[in-house]
Length: 587
Image (cartoon, rainbow, N blue to C red; front, side, top):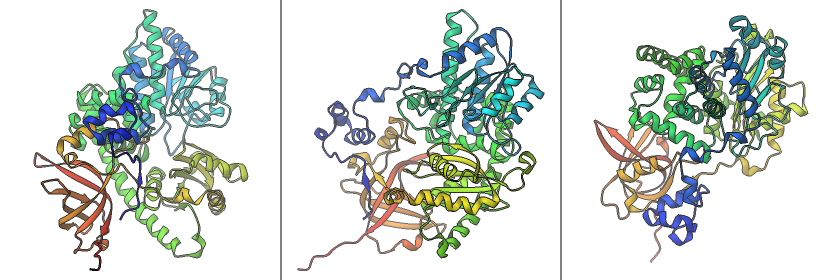
């Protein structure tokens, strides 16, 4: 049997929180799901925009709005400086769309990942001055650590507003306004806003101010499609506030009330907007936008989100599709190399006891290292950092390498890197990020020393942190094995990071099986009191682990709807499997 951790152990209605019992009378399964995610009352699931936290709680938002309002009225040239991922792209597009409607003189600049690196650096400020001669710079999804860039801008008399969400333990830069729920002196009720969420709040408060004063303004909620996309693509924690934002953005896209670029990207992916789910932001739209920043320049992605012309949207979406295919090819080659290196290291005594995977190759692509680190983290359940050569033309240092880190629950990767930096001040040139993802720059000559130092930090952590827990929401009732329930479940809430998608387990009788393409296991199953066979698929299954004589299996699975030739059918997406061996008692 599988070793699983239950999220909720309630098996009867009276074991659930009193406020959830009326819901449990309709669906015990759904009520158990909510209880297992910390929901104790139905009002915590309400998704009206009136339930959003007030913008005034954000430290610095009043100053930012006042300065933006003046800049618009005086016709000052505003330059948006974004980031080269999907959150940065959606933040930039949101600022451009809303500020333009309010009458601002505005343009945008996104650092080329390979030439300028991340954030408001002095180099990107100088490029902005040379190209746009701005009176004001507004950062989105970056800037909280950009002390030097702020100083460079202010030296030319440029007003700087920082909007960001990244973590920091340092004093904020002395910009004219800083809005970041994670800055040291901010008491905003949600620390989970991503960059586009922060931009949405700033613009919403600005629109309200201008509406009250009778000035040109805009209804910022019409751009929640961008907020939803950026929030899920950046793996924002889905607390109540973020679930509300994503819920309304998702519904807008389903109804066709969204930017043409999103519709064109969905067309490229062969997806029907009316059938879109929250996870599609991360698996369908996000990768195509991100491909621009990884393989070329994020300007393509932003222009796709900005265009009002359908033909242009289709052309740009096609370019992004091609870049994404190139990204997949490069990623596949790097993953194969990484897997071989990890296998070789596993056979050597030097890697024994290491609680991380840290790799570097001279020919790896800087734009894909984050994805490869994520895959390694998932397959080995260890914090993973993948390095590639930095751009020597920009850094002037042919020994610099850039790393992208991805982490597991219980290891705050940014803080772990900071611990290394504090203990060994000469090892790390730059770093920043979140609990689950971070970036850093070191010298190639310091690679082995960094590897050793990072593993020293990991060695101090409890063993339990590195033992992967597989959670289950328990068993399903017989009536839950239906197309209706699968669809109802998918739409019951915004599921994702921090509000985990439902996953169940159960013991099934095996009616038949097939191994597809030597790597996918297809099963036909029977479940107690269900009168029809239940189909299941386990992608990328190790077929050598299957016993063709198996009569029963214990599955960890998610409910899915399989569409084939215009018909829909219930399907279980298997996430783990154990053969159940019958025990026979001696007579």
